Image (cartoon, rainbow, N blue to C red; front, top):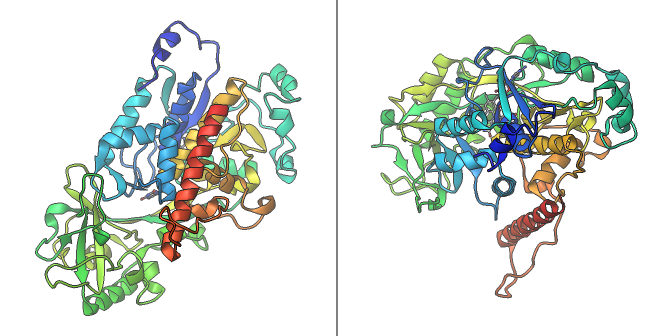
Length: 511
Ligand SMILES: Cc1cc2nc3c(=O)[nH]c(=O)nc-3n(C[C@H](O)[C@H](O)[C@H](O)COP(=O)(O)OP(=O)(O)OC[C@H]3O[C@@H](n4cnc5c(N)ncnc54)[C@H](O)[C@@H]3O)c2cc1C
């Protein structure tokens, strides 16, 4: 997948003089960052600690491993912000998007993949690229790849103080060049499970002490252990997927008595104990453990992941009181994950309680749910507009550790960090994409565009239209009729998406 001519130019030694950019972490973000750099003609050393050092969630040594769900969520750019992000990434040559296409499995209007086919494709592309060298090692501290660390704490007290000094095109460049430090460039894309020693080093440099909190993993069930005399296949509201498939999900119905018993069992089930350092750390709101939702009230789950709307139980010809949905997890269709059922219940309790779900009474679990750490920076305070650490601008961050949430968002932030670092290395000016685009809106979120002065409490976020600048919503449809409620909302999203793609194209042309 490397662009034509790159291999030849590499063989002729055109880049032999150029110092590589180091990318630490070969997850979603690190893979995209390495790809963006290498395709711009910049050599890359990609450092990945797996399989020598493991994380609590990864199971393989592949790049861009999907640790939980196999879904990149909606692929519809016209009505959904993550679908728009897919489209923008495709236009910028995303490796993740290119590898997802051939790995796709049925999931209605969502883009879901066979996780092995997907990661194999990303890994093969990176390993084959002539400008990418892979090093399997843990980078234990920020300064392991840097010659000298400046007085970071003073820069934290006065954010931006180092900006001019380190700007490769700015007034301080000459002094840095003389010291041989201006061509050092590292992207840390070590993700929510950044190894503890590196996390300590980041904390020491930034002075931040609130880098960790958690979210949880949903269980995966073997398809042949689902009882299809009870469960049935149907997409919510019979929404069509790409191949016209209206039955992408497996649905397990519950009546009121079964539902109440299930909630009681969740509330009583044995939970994983929090470690001392994990206490008082908040969850991702979008990824709450099922038992935490159950604690919030009897009907919370019925209005969340167990909502029965848009689904008709064919056995009785009516809507169930609650429905548990499962989504295909691999290309073969042999595994299904329980949608939204991330959990911190103990393994024994999970098997017992999830087998109370009608249709899953004999379920065999390929993977049970789990609990994990999530490491992220207070980015509005720490990072500049091109994702550089203000206190040490030779260092960039990318991916989930910057405070975005989700596979696609993490990959997007890797792609942008790679493009910024490539432009810097090649001596080209680069502006972040406009905030009217999904990519620009995400960067604005993490670098403080939406939090005045970078103050306030910063929380990781999925891409959503709430991050985009306002647009006047169309009041009338193409047929001249006045739009109402939901119609107007849809028209507004479409207008925002069209504006985004237009602005992205202008930005790409100007770059
Ligand atoms: C358990 C779990 C479940 C999740 N479930 C979902 C989900 O279902 N859907 C979703 O959209 N998002 C999910 N996320 C959130 C997030 O989108 C993913 O974690 C995503 O993989 C983040 O991409 P990343 O590239 O930033 O980090 P990662 O993909 O985790 O990549 C980071 C890489 O850095 C390596 N690394 C770490 N420290 C070092 C070091 N010191 N030296 C060298 N290498 C290092 C790791 O081994 C890893 O390969 C989940 C996160 C976790 C932890």
